[in-house]
Length: 312
Image 1 (spheres, helix red, strand yellow):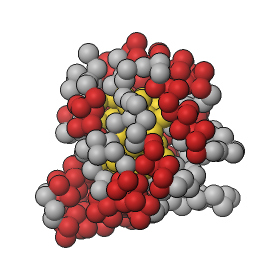
Image 2: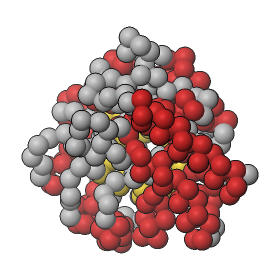
Image 3: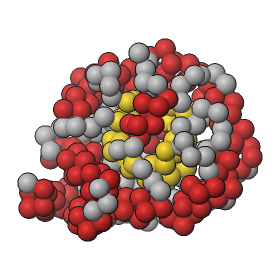
Image 4: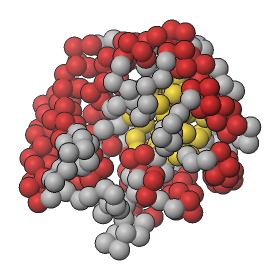
């Protein structure tokens, strides 16, 4: 049975990892390896998972593959884990996907950032309302890729079914304004991973999505504990040891000027280095070049040493 709304809120108050989609050399999904990753991350202490999400290469998955990935995650994980299923597209397409996820037992729907060229705040709010009419499962909108007003953020918290918001704008002041004006029972999640966890926490965020914690979950769990205890010095130390690999994720890669182009490939490499399953990537994402692979290995070794010295 899926978690209750309150249980989903509780799970959002923590570390949310992405279940990246392992592809083989023919770009087919390796469901056994996806399930293995989920179980190992759960055994490490993680309780909140995003399946068919942005970092899972959502936009490179067919609709049937999205449901298959979510089904694999739900079946692989114990009942106390929270599985957030990625939803996007037109209203009709999103509603159909939500229905499929409902039948599979997903705990909540993570609504992907809008992929429209032109967006109206009121229209986007209505989109979420329409999605909420076809499910009793909670909604977690993902705010990224556009710059809404603080009023929009506050209105978003008052849509029926919204229990959390994944906020991925590099603007902590707007986050604080949205939290201050919004409903008290919505959990705000830092969607920009460990580098923004400290500043966003100070503004009222209660959880964060994983960056390097996707493959070294102990670092995210330690960071969450430090933030929860109000130990800002330790939280900053933990955040800082994540920065070199996280900054690597923001790089453009070769023959490209778009920042963050290697982000998914870098995390998949981290999974492999940590003994988990990364696999290939689908276009338009590119695999790491040989020199980038070498850099990732050096940064991982540095991260490993820093984790050992800081948290043992």
